[in-house]
Picture 1: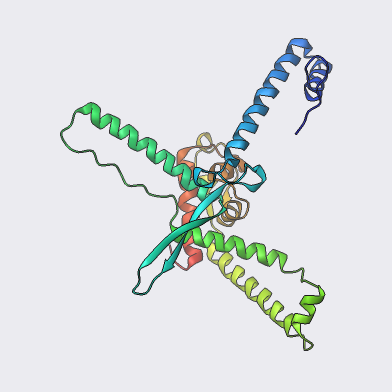
Picture 2: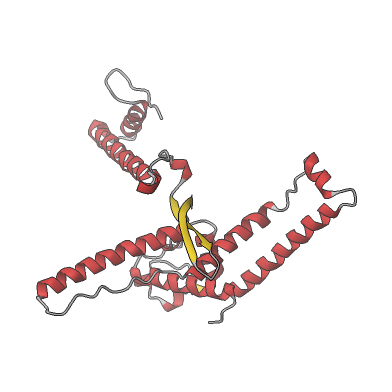
Amino acid sequence: MMIAMQDDGRSDVQRRIEAMTVASGGGRKAASAAIAFSAEDERQRLAAMLAAATPPEAMQAAPVAPARGAQRLVPNVTVLPGGLRRIEPGHWEAADVFDAMTRSAWLKHEATVEKARTAHEASKSEENFTAPAFEPPFTPGQIAMARHYRGLVERHSAGGVRCSSAEALLAGGVSGGGDRDWMDGYLREGEELARLRARIGTGSAMVVRRIRPSSRGSKASILDRRLVDMVTLSGMTLSEVLRAHGWAEKGEHREALRVALASALDRMQGYRD
């Protein structure tokens, strides 16, 4: 993105910020401060965007592309005769919010382990240090169900627009069997979505009356269905869900949402609370 620069070295954006600040009565000093803050804020935003778009070391051949989003490496596993498995070089696919939350939990776990190791060394204990095991926030089954639900919703939402190309019409045949197959599949997806949403239920992940006003910071309850949709469909983290409902971002609140989301995903798989 190119920004036009004036003779004095200031960009058009900086000039507009200064003009708006002075017009509102802030004066030249306030305008300069606003420009400096805006420039620093923009530098931090661009740095975070480039850091997220920079591919990992194993993917350095790929260009830096912010529009591509974060990527994760998925190994290719081939099952051999006798039940043996051969792991081959994997492929890259788009990372989602569950990858981000798992990564965040892993980084926190590493920091906790390092702090515990430092404390153990300082204590000069003769016992060997044993690092605590990492517990991911969600199980593989829960994550698989969340991704299945997301894909199901996306396909069903786009299912009302049927392809009308000549190739599709010819593939359907003269008898119209293609129309029936398409409609049957659309109806099956709708029935599965209804079953999954019924399993989520109408409960609340965060209920206002159970939390003191000084602790919750809001009066908005968070329904289980709303929580599932915001995380799996909108890609929002638990902290972003709390902010959207006005809740204070506390560890206990995030843990309550995590437990509620995990329980809802278990119910969607067919498990009972």
